[in-house]
Image (cartoon, rainbow, N blue to C red; front, side, top):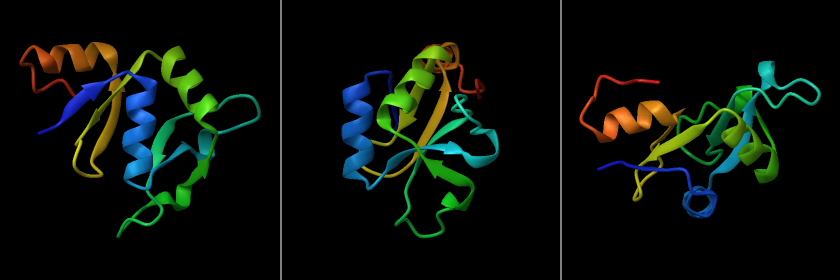
Length: 100
């Protein structure tokens, strides 16, 4: 069962417990522009972190707030998806077709 959060402490705690690190998509990370953010799991089987660059949690959360994002995640596993907060709200109200 997935959960949704915007709480920075919850996100960081969950990610670090799973071996996750804050990251940006390499091709979008230019100069002062963090670009598209992700949580990468370098030790996970089949991890596709080759296109990601590690960033600081401060950079990650600044972008997270600027873009008004939320994290959908499995509290007991590595599944996660970063979505817009409006999408997260629609999903919480039963619209499971809301994807972004």
